[in-house]
Length: 296
Image (cartoon, rainbow, N blue to C red; front, top):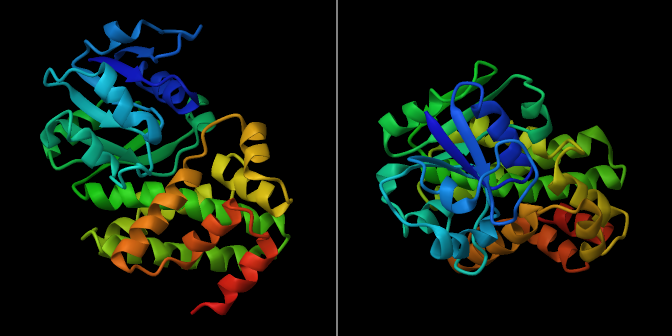
């Protein structure tokens, strides 16, 4: 199968390295890269099967400027919520391609481990089961894909866990111990599920790979960019300083603002996300923790 990976960051390159094992695979982005398999963007977008791994906050503009619908079958490997519109990624992509041509990738997966060929399990979510099965067949043997029809649940899990990961990094950076970290992650999972209920997400999704699996991984490892944001906040660095040090997009930052905005509009209780936003805005991490412990 001929597949084009759109987005040549670390995650895009990791997925390219995996998909090229069983497929004719190329990779591209708006910025030219000196990497294996790279082609011009126009050529890549001519493929019938497209995997998108681009920044959530740049997705709408990218599609508006570059994408032309030709019945392509799309797998979205990005996670997050558009902060300007408050839209989930399936809502953004549905403006440019029919829903039956869209599938979404989620689950616990660090790019560095995928590139090494280390085993992992992922979830492909789509309202089109046949499409999900096709995409599942493209992955190599060290990646076990599961199929789900809960697109919104997978999207909320993938976006929200990055916010909890920031809080997890703060917890570790303040030296609060394993008890506190476990408590935070557990309550973070409850908060994610409560948010998902308002969008009719399936509860099982939050207990599976897309939810608990990805959350446990991302909220407890320095391989996570969002976790490192939290470590920086705990150390007293400003957000600009932290992002400059990381040198990559940490989607949890923008997502935290999007979640709290939606939560205010829909009266959803999101105490951890709210405190993360406050810390991103300059609130002292220790004070944020104290305020979080006061909440029910």
